[in-house]
Image 1 (cartoon, helix red, strand yellow):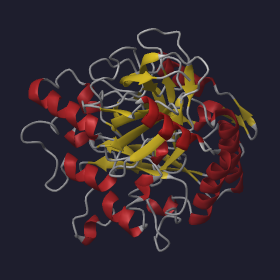
Image 2: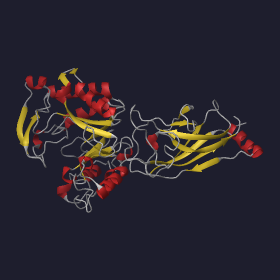
Image 3: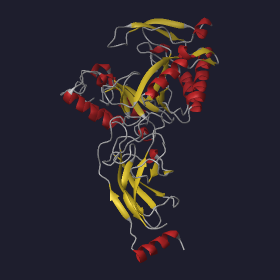
Image 4: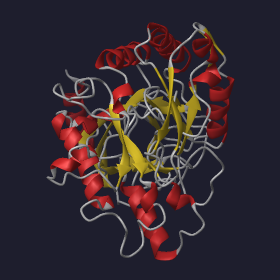
Length: 451
């Protein structure tokens, strides 16, 4: 006789009944993993955050065509992870006002370097830039060799939250504006993207520009497993309808057929420096139509680099608005209900995503009946966090093992541990999060008959 039928008969004969609990919503913490506002690498206690980011010169890590010294990059990963934060990295070759990021072995071999004054440096003064010949086979080979070596060493590294493609153009942002004639061809762009696709199967990648098949400058990337980075958030994000604004992030998403790509690939970005100090004032200083809520609705961004919120000048109501904005980024997972069939010990939970984006990694989801202790059994489910899309609740079930089962009432709890040893766990938007055990969501207390 099927076990579910046995359980049903027993529930009739012995009075066992399904027990259910509705769980009350409460805002999730601002510093939940892999979302929110993030600063440049450094100790920044002024505002809650879970990520740090920084640029790294290719010359710092690549010493020969197939030789690498990862010390500089490794140090950044370690510093961020020591604070329980994930790192978002990008490598570059060009930086106005700085020494070139091209490895010396390439310049020593005669790689052509074009020296020019970059005026696209606002709000900072124009500065000298050094653009390499991106079509040179020696540079192209070096870039693909580097990407494959980077993937072998760091793909899936728990310290690395996301990785920007970088490497091409000023600041690794895939442009040499206003001197675009020296930027990499589509052939070189495809070589770089192909190398990343082969080298990274776990760590999520982020490209600067969405591009469709008819893009005049960029190789098509709408079908690739890449997210995007809007580096003019709250400045040039929302479509205006003006032809001169076709370069804005929203129109580029539409032209690439990528308006819904956020469902599978992360969207991040940078707040424009022009609005750092005043975005969350009342009124704010974003250009009309580029307000935070409008930009978030278009991008479904999970994280934004925003130095403005990490300054001591952010206080009072402006700080409260910034905290609310940070909380709106990315996912917010709420367990709406939990139900247990005492006869079969089957637990069913209903989870909804009240945020604007999914969680992009399938971290483990675990269950315990430890109550208020710490030594109870812990069971790992096969549930996948990436399935929980905004507006589409999921129902997951798990059969609690009969081994270690106790009679009477049991408190059931659920958690998603952080892959970083010092990282805070993913916390749910529930009143009973951390109520009995740090890092655990208490689903309720349920009664069980003998197994």
